[in-house]
Length: 446
Image 1 (cartoon, helix red, strand yellow):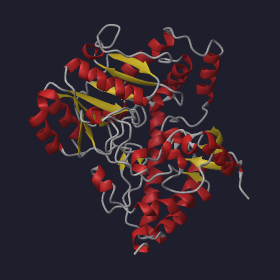
Image 2: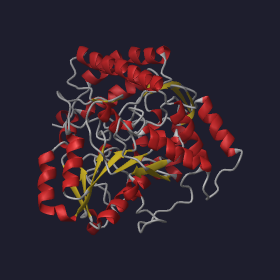
Image 3: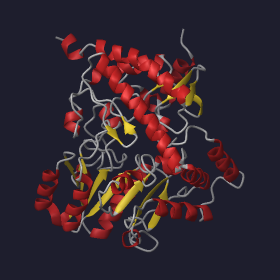
């Protein structure tokens, strides 16, 4: 007998490509039926069949405070009562831009003077790249294999996230001349960066990099890597675009850049991109940087960007409420909860003799079925990923919702209390056993 999740999925596949509106939701790498969420509160979600799960997806990051935080919901309701969209400036936009600029500074380091609000992370990174090309008058872009910067043309080659999950090298529909403007390098390899600048330096507009990789699994930058990227780019009059769509305001009040700066790694990106937490769960994103760069955007400069829903008042209300509530105590709670689960995950897999690591970047972590933390995409792809599906389903059966791909980060929230965390801790040993008993499909095929 099928439950309501099966029924919804069958119906969805008739009217939505693949039955989902973002590929990783389809459970393609873990198998089974996606859970159709009907509600969420605090650290939990409830599916269409009425089953409750402790959630470690957190809407892929935005739910820093937990789902449906009363003050965030209240702010959105209040904004909605005044109108859903105006297509005109609002005072709240100014307050949010000012708040972002104030938060993203550590000591005398302050990379943000101006902020442009948009609706999605893809739009933010796409605009950041156009801006970098407009500022420099150059065409070429450097990205790193396994890094995901949205699905705009030219950025999907060797991308992570859903592309890694589906084992696709890129995307159909991207013209070859556009793809040729992107130079894809191995992550954490500064020699490769220097070599490509030696050959193409006068034509390279920018380097774009995830502040900490979290779309090929969590793969942190090596110490000094991000700072060195800034130095190399600036020595060739190119820009550094730091993609904090996922990490921004998630791992530190000033994002991953702020976390590194607070630990003594001093460098200044030219453009930063934000999404997820900045909108508190509503569609909102941003690009930001110093005024001399940002002022190249229209209407002041020649780089065009526009959007009817840019700075949507409901999204801005959610973002303002979330960032104002994201106090040092919130980050301390998230850090503590993440450390507790990550340590328990490591212990459970170790007890079952499963080869693994638990890579971490601030409060972000995940599992990699490798003996050492991967440092690049090629290494991440060599892991025993077949162990993740049984692990995932064992956790799901125990009432814990994980990202449905080994190439995604796990997210804790400030709402994950002891009761929620205990459910996760109780589920881990059984899931680790399932991972240990998983059979290598390549051996089965022989």
